[in-house]
Length: 130
Image (cartoon, rainbow, N blue to C red; front, side):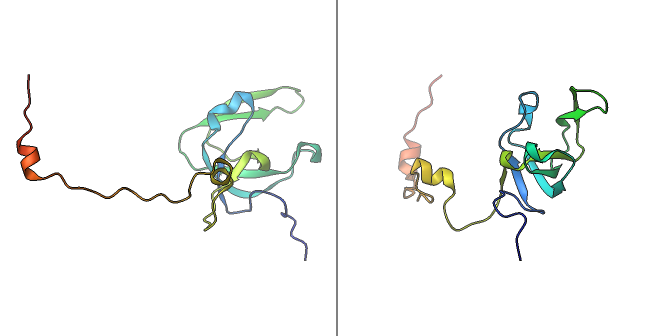
């Protein structure tokens, strides 16, 4: 059986963060969306798109095509919308470090320094000045 979503970042049901968008819609970067299903109304040349559901109640920008017009219109709403798979980053739980951790060589887990309590005598020796 062939997985038709092979090679894609997201899968239906995933929560994902928008990591890139059209210049007019940059305010969406960082927004969390739920991936609902494949969006098939764009031509194949535009790449694979998902129908996504914004998880915020805040209206956000979206370019809407008007039938018979060549230019899109920018509207602000909270409706489901199409988003390119390559511009989404799924939020998956994994035991392995993510690619940014690997690229930056930052340890995936850091340990906090030992907590050293302040002794009562040190607190009493503080003086506030006006």
